[in-house]
Image 1 (tube, one colour):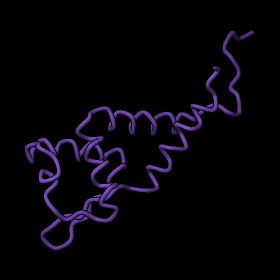
Image 2 (image 1 turned 45 degrees about the horizontal axis):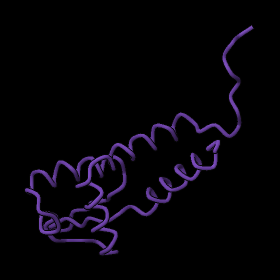
Image 3 (image 1 turned 90 degrees about the vertical axis):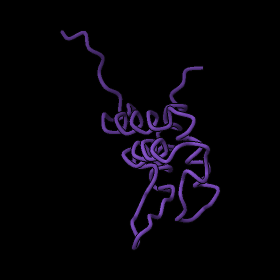
Length: 108
């Protein structure tokens, strides 16, 4: 007999676990959280320099944006000679669902 536990139908799938881990890692720095807060407060595409929103060097903002975009939390599209940045509402919804799913399974 195997001593491994049998999977439950309510277990988070491996893909969901990977997605949640990636999004949480992207949110693991205060500057990235503040970038998301600023973009969410704007509520539409932001065409300005992101370094105007936060007291960070443009290269630092660029590195943080790369992580947010890789996690799918921020979208960035080039239009002519400028880039439009906005929060990805579908990915934020997925993040909320995954966190809610964890909270529902809490034992206490």
